[in-house]
Image (cartoon, rainbow, N blue to C red; front, side):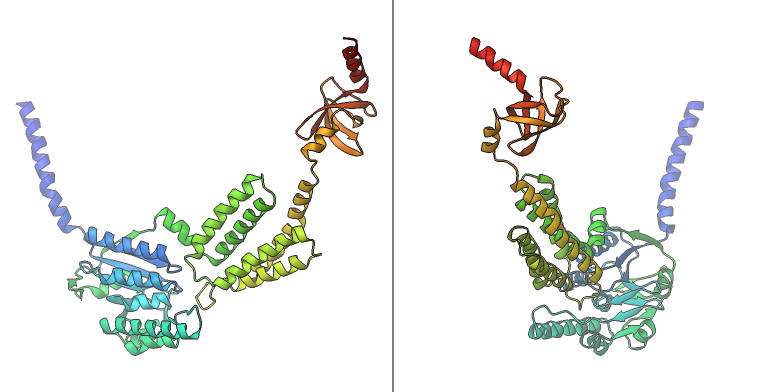
Length: 439
């Protein structure tokens, strides 16, 4: 009877938990997926936002909140984010520029215009969305017209001021949160994430009702690789890696045989190409940098008394200053970094690389080493068993297999191991030679 009672209690407990589980699911608060779009808008951040939106759809979240604090970025990445937002219809998508001190500038402003719900915290700003042209005034005008039409279309689709949206593109105007609300660029002002949903409670977004005013916020972060590369998308880092990569490759060409500089140079160069592909690169700046390093390499061989080195340093400075389009926010290399790298590389090539190349040229040829075998030498630093001898007017590292040889003793070169001479005292050499003749 006790056994049946225990099994009955276990069965009752299991049924009770099974019945309680749906009840818990019904009373649990809905979750809001939070995606933080911070820093430069690039392919990595676009991929991150797209994954956050998919997470919201897959988990049937109450909404997806995109927190925006960006100076802008690439047009292609911006359009990818807007496309992902517009195609997410089963979950409400809310864009919020916050907290106080954040900004939705350039590409960030266009993303706000393309969001079904756009809110800003007090002390934030939006605008300055003029696009960057790369190949002259005609192309820049076309790009501007296209961006202005795109901004107008997004604003009209979400019942916002199309005229102000166009001015943000053509005139680069920037608005505070209060001004943006007054001119109907955003929908409302909310100081915190919680206040965003307190305002939206009872409203419908994309046909989906937002019923909960106090949801649970579930942040979705970048993967390790995304965060690493996104953090490395910095003009200064890309500039340094590009130059170090070129220097490592050229050093390997000038002084072959040392593998490490060449391998590290190739790795740095490849990483720099990845970073440069995520930034608004000016091709003229890249050409100037390559030409500058080449002129520094010329100085090593041509001995132009500093003319090639000076020209190389000047080209490196100009290349660094014009490497990125300065119209893009934060897309600039520090001037002090450019000057410091140029001077450091100039000194490196004219002093270190030249010394290495010259020392390589002074190394004896294999034929010269073979001719020295059998000649006499004088010990200038005692061999115990290694030291230094003088042969044919030059000092050589030497090794005496027969034992220690004091300074001043005459020796004979019996062989060569690399750049080390094998020697033995002259008296021993003569005795060995006499025994050979007797035999």
